[in-house]
Length: 138
Image (cartoon, rainbow, N blue to C red; front, side, top):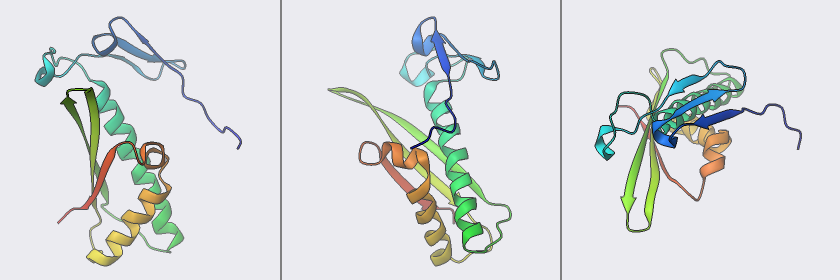
C-alpha cells in the first residue's frame, strides 16, 4: 500500500495543557483540558481536534458516495460529537456522527451515510475499538 500523505504534528509542553504544531506550520495551537475534566477550557482540546478531523473526513466520504451514486448534495453537513468517558481502567472515547442530507428520504440518506461509514479512513481506523453511532438529522 502506497503512502500518499503523512501528517506530522508535534506536541510540546504539558500534553493536554501544552501545544501542538504541524511540520508545515499550518496548525499551531495551544491546548487546554476542558473545564468538565478540571482544565481551564481556554483553548482547544484533543477531542475537539479529533471531532474536526472525523467530521471533515466523513463528510468527504459522504460526498464521494453521493457522486458514485450520481446524486448531488446541497446543504449537507456532518456533526461529530466526541465524548470522553472515564471508567475504572481509565478514559475512552465514543463518537456520534449526525448526517444532515436535505432533500433526501430516510432510506436514501441512510444508504449514503452507511456507505460513507464504510469508506471513511477515520471510521476504518477506530472500527471495533470506539463506539460510533451514525444518526440522520431529523
